[in-house]
Length: 107
Image 1 (tube, rainbow, N blue to C red):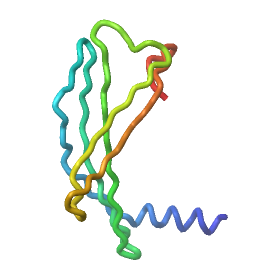
Image 2: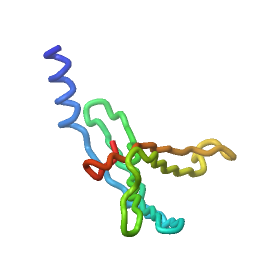
Image 3: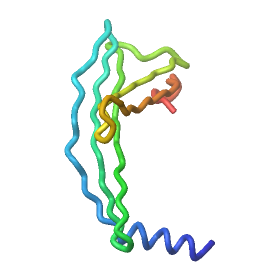
């Protein structure tokens, strides 16, 4: 276990990060409900073996003017884009969460 932890730490230290620009979504509204968001990507190249990993980061801010979501409300956001490698196919991400009134957050 110790050798795995050290190897993982060494890989993290030797990786090079490159952040791409964020793409901001236009605000979506439905009545008093608003959604804003953005997506960006981070490329990590491991210096030790040259492996390349790209992470997609999606951020959504959901709100209701003048009030909060009902306790236990299901909040879902979805983004879709054309595949860069398979013409006619799409990729996407879905984020689902349940709003908790007691701490004004969603888990």
